Structures are given as structure tokens and as C-alpha cells.
Image 1 (tube, rainbow, N blue to C red):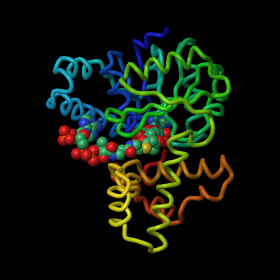
Image 2: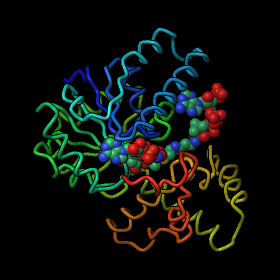
Image 3: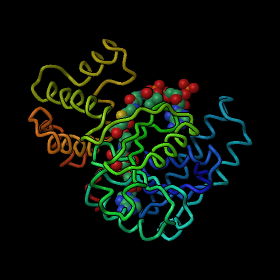
Image 4: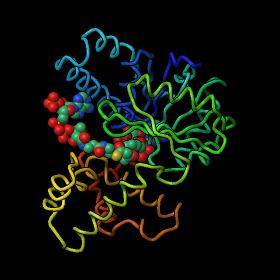
Length: 284
Ligand code: CAA
Ligand code: NAD
């Protein structure tokens, strides 16, 4: 069974930073990579802040927190991931961009390394075709925010081996997560069900049925969710929600997944949610 002494995480946004934190707290040496230095700096600040919150509440010992911070290294050079036993990719939700990265990674990391994607919706089977190691490619889908949410959804591509699946499941459990398994169809389990709800909330707003406050209060208080669907979309990132809906629409071929025009317009306007503004100004 792989020990995962060294974990690489690519993409230091809201998901990658949380995943890197989990790996460091679990005892691995971690390389967190982003092409953007600002993302690396803000990841460092948010990981430090998150660990401090756990420590100050007595949910993590000071020693574990300090050691985890010392195990994290930040880079924008892919070659630094050469020693990784597993690389978990959490970059933009685009099949073409992910495939390009997996093809590059495949040439750099050691032959035994697992390549995992935190994709929300994209086919693991197709991402794996960009590599010469489809048996070692898998979906490892964390929920936002990774340090708090209890679930990891694992997705096996058509060629993912039992060994890769078992090792990835063990790692997710070492992170303290419960694992559910999905077949490799667009959106897997969670987003196949969650995104139509979020999209419908945008339709309810778009067609003037209710205000955004009443939509969120209705669902939050009426169905006991921690956030209403519009607040949750804002938290996930409207750009991410739109990308997932497009994958569902293309992959499952059903008009019910067509993104609401209001959601599309918000993203076109750069209003992508609380994580950042004017994302469209930053070419990926
Ligand atoms: N690290 C450490 N602690 C954190 C934290 C972090 N990153 N984020 C929040 N916290 C702590 C806060 O310090 C706070 O602690 P206290 O209660 O002790 O003060 C506690 O968590 C609650 O945080 P907040 O008061 O800021 O806000 P909240 O009560 O609304 O909780 C939340 C925040 C946990 C995110 C909660 O709102 C929630 O569960 N929301 C729904 C999240 C969800 O559904 N995620 C899944 C999205 S779908 C997905 O991820 C898949 C996909 O592909 C899109
Ligand atoms: P994000 O925009 O917050 O972060 C993405 C980061 O990746 C950015 O810092 C960007 O600079 C970096 N990046 C983009 N292309 C890169 C490349 N080629 N090489 C190196 N770095 C690159 O995005 P996020 O919300 O963290 O989402 C990341 C992935 O996780 C997506 O696939 C998304 O679907 C998935 N996901 C998101 C959520 C969520 O709630 N936001 C939940 C689960 C899964």
C-alpha cells in the first residue's frame, strides 16, 4: 500500500489550498503549486488562518499545526513535483486545460505515482487518455471547504486499477473523510443532484418568482441547509457552477441541465462570487 510521503497539489485556489492543508495535517510533505504567485500567497495565508482556528478551538494541537505548516512548500515549477507519490489536481474546471496538465505531469512524476483530479464533473476516463498511465488516474472529489466537509467522492475511470482505487480511498480516510464511490458519468453523484437545484434557484430569481433573500431563506430554513442555493453558488464560484452545468448538459444531453441565462450573464460580467471578482480578467 502506498504511503504517500510526498503529496503534490496543483491549483492553490479555494480547493487546492484546503486539500494541501489536509495532506500536511495528515503527515505528508506537500508541494502546493500554482502558476500565479498571488494565489500561492493567499493560499499560504488562508491555510495558516484555518490551522490557527482549529488550534485556538482545541480541535488540533499546536504541535500538529506547527508541523503541518512546516511540511508545506509552495512552488510554481512543475519539476518540484517529481518526488510526489500522488498529485491531486485542482485547477480550472476545463477538460482541455486539465488534459494538457496531466500530459505534462505524466512525463515528470515517477512511474508509480497516482494522478488524481478534484474535478467537479469532467470525465476521469477522458482526462486519463492524456497520460500513459490510465490505471493510475482517478477522481478524488473534495467538497468545499475541504478542511471542514466530511465527504470525498471517488470516481474510477474506465481503466482505473483496484490498487489505485484502494490507495486513494485509504488516503481520503487518513484525511478523516468518508468516501462515496461514483461511476464516471458527468457530475458524478453530488453535482448531478446539487447543480440542478442551484440552476433552478437562478431560474426562480430570473423569472421574478421571488427575491434572492427569500429564495435563500426559503431553502435554508425550509429544508435545513446551512446555506441557501444562491449563497452556496456564490461560495462555490459562479464560474465553477456554470462549467459544471455545461458538462452536465453536454455529457447527459438533457435540456434540463441548460444553464440559466442569468447565471451565464453574471459570469460574463465577471461576477463570479465571493472568492474573487472579475475572474474573466485573469486568463487561465
Ligand atoms: N478552516 C477552519 N475553520 C473554518 C473554516 C476553514 N476553512 N471555514 C469555516 N470555519 C469555521 C469557522 O471558524 C466557524 O467556527 P465557529 O463556529 O467555532 O466560530 C465555523 O467553521 C463556521 O463557520 P462560519 O461561522 O464562517 O460560517 P458557517 O456557520 O456558515 O459555516 C460552512 C461555514 C461550513 C461553509 C457552512 O456554511 C456550510 O457547511 N455551507 C455549505 C457548504 C457546502 O455545501 N459545501 C459543498 C459545496 S458543493 C462542492 O463542494 C462540490 C463541488 O464540486 C462544487
Ligand atoms: P479556483 O479558481 O479558486 O482555483 C484554481 C487555481 O488553479 C487558481 O489559483 C489558478 O491560478 C490555478 N491554475 C489554473 N490553471 C492552472 C495551471 N494550468 N497550472 C497551475 N495552476 C493553475 O478554483 P477552485 O474553486 O479551487 O476549483 C478548482 C477545481 O476544483 C475545479 O476543477 C473545480 O471544479 C473543483 N471543485 C471546486 C469546488 C468549489 O466549491 N469551488 C468544489 C469541489 C471541486
